[in-house]
Amino acid sequence: MKITFYGGTKTVSGANYLLESENGDIKVLIDCGLIQGSRFAEKQNFENFPYDPKEIDALLVTHAHIDHIGRIPKLWRDGFRGTIYSTPPTKDFGELLLLDSEHILSEEAKEFKKEPLYTVEDINEVLKLWKKIEYHQKFKINSSKNPNSFGFEVEFFDAGHILGSSIIVVREKDKTIAFSGDLGNYPAPIIKTTEKLNYADYLVIESAYGDRIHQNKFKQKEELEDVIEDTVKRGGVLLIPAFAMERTQDLLYYLNELIEQGRVPRVPVFIDSPLAIKLTTVYSKYRKYFNEYAQKMIKSGDDILNFPGLRFALTTEESKAINDVPPPKIIIAGSGMMHGGRILHHARRYLSDPKNTLLFIGFQAEGSLGRRILDGAEKVTIFGEEIEVKCQKIQIESYSAHADQEQILEWIKPIRLDLKKIFIVQGEENAMNALAQKIRDEMAIETIIPSFGDCFTL
Image 1: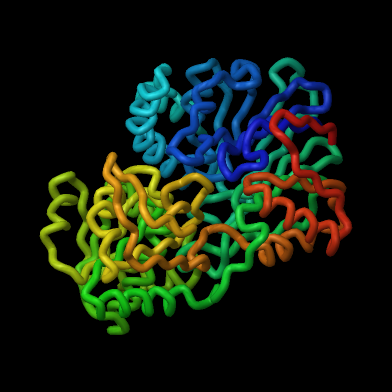
Image 2 (image 1 turned 135 degrees about the vertical axis):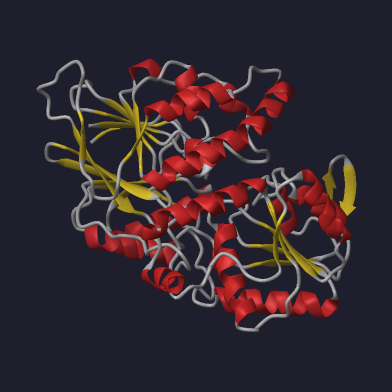
């Protein structure tokens, strides 16, 4: 087999890997994500792919986050007509996330004076090619040119990152390569713990938190409780920029417990993200993917994602009406890195008041507004207006959906004696270098940090 790295190299986003069979008869992509940094979509997303999409036989999707699926409709637009494979939740979430992104991308295309990355029609065509595959339901990808060739055998394992996320294992004859996708941070409140593999010759591993250890991993609920109590005592607004997928649902789960157990004051809680509201409804469809405890809670009659005082702001009018509700209150709004979305309207209003709290619970990419605030910016520009940052700023890293360095190493351990090479992707360079050094020191495995376009024969 041959692997070429066309994304996720020395950066967190834009995952895109081309895997080719021994004789070149089969070409498969793993993920086709949006490249993100200081903006929702960087300019290079609008450039041509460095390979011919018409030649790609299949696309394997690890999970539905936009930095893993955001360029799939462009792939179709540029000629791809193969089959897309993912778990059922990934396809359903992917549809909602792509439709939500389309509007933002068309606005940014105007800025770049480029054609839109894709249209709603392109998304609809993509969905016709998208096939749902359950975990451990092995399937084959065969060559159309050479039907007698061995082909690829593919299997999905639960990555424990978001609902339906997958580790993808591809076998050709006696060679096996595993793609971690994004590995989950455990324990997670709703989804199951990351599955471990028992064999792989080669591994492509993410490294978003490759240089960090999540503090207080088992105390997410307690940390949230403290932040809520402190903000309410000050009579302030707790503002949480949250990713619509998984982070928002995790928050709802913990808030449900804290409020029903009387551990925090009952204040209005707003979900100000149409996308998060739609995604939350999908969860009820896939309860069999929940962990044992969450399923037990549901069977006991607890609506784990709903509680008294929770209000959903679906329309613009409902979003604006949040301003009329006096503090203390909690506002959970997209987007998670403050790239855009309704969080910016609330940030403009609430950042300059020391009584308020801005709580980060997800990864903040270099260049994003969230990262600038977290790194100590005293002033930021929102909608052309300079805003002073005087509110409390808190980050709870244990809410991250990504495994930390310890968890990544622990996940690699069962297959360490079989691995011939590890390729480190999807992280900032400091994180990649720290993880690579740790793997070399502790496991003595050849570890490579590929650059864009690097190609390796396995």
